[in-house]
Length: 393
Image (cartoon, rainbow, N blue to C red):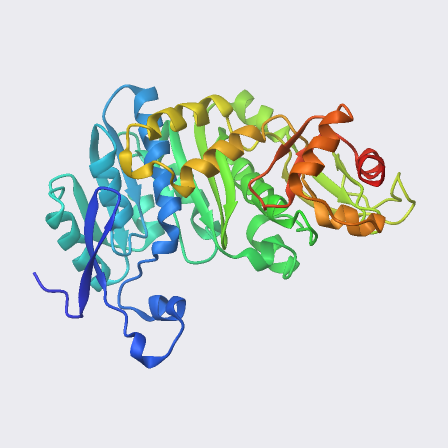
């Protein structure tokens, strides 16, 4: 089988796949060349796909049976092929794409990796493919929606195509709306107001999670976050979908708003969306939401993923494993983080090393942890006023 354009072989996980050869002689940036290629393949997203493998491995062990998976926007097919190769008892992977070239390349890659009997590729729109599986017996145990841009147009059909107790993964790369550059677009797509500021990436993740929780509740399903994170140019949410009105209502009760004072850096969670005077300095606060205020991950689930990663030699020392470990350590903290440099700048004191900041906060009697949102980002149960006393002392 030929695909009609130059290709080269790359390795990822246990897969060896063909991807379009980029014409670097034209002088375009590499990311631009990838977007212009006949079929999209982004090696930068390998950690994203590594986490998908670990999540589905943990989910399969929870279910204790064979599982079905779907990737409605397959590109080169690398994710679906890796799931078939690296997750025990994957019985079926259904992939789809609107590009005939992608379908042809995906089929070829599945054949080359010996999984064509379990992996199929369909020339279908993502929503149509998911809709065709929205019936009892046709749904999937795992659905992975990883578009170029926003997953918002696919959330509803994705929810309906997931089995009870199944897992839905969503990736969003439209960070400008989610981080406050285009608040109107964020409201249209995610039903919430974003917040520009030093912790905007966590707010973005909570807006996406909140949109999923609300949409799942429409179908009387609870979308419980298992693992969520921000990395590079995207955010990612893995949630388990469980049937039940009470379960859905319980998650909706964890929706709310974040209020932030850009003058003194005070922040708080609230159940109302009224801008009010900051309780710390009296300035008017900014409001984000509605968004998810609950935990973004299940530490027990993440511990199982970390244990399982030790059985995969190619994941030893991988970025994805370090990311999972850091996210696990963030459990139990308020729904925001502090940037050390921003706090020191606000105080007018010299900035300090991250380790020094952690030591000071801990010695003052507060809980503190590094966070995956940045090298200078920390989570703590100290308020901004308490933090200022620690840093200014």
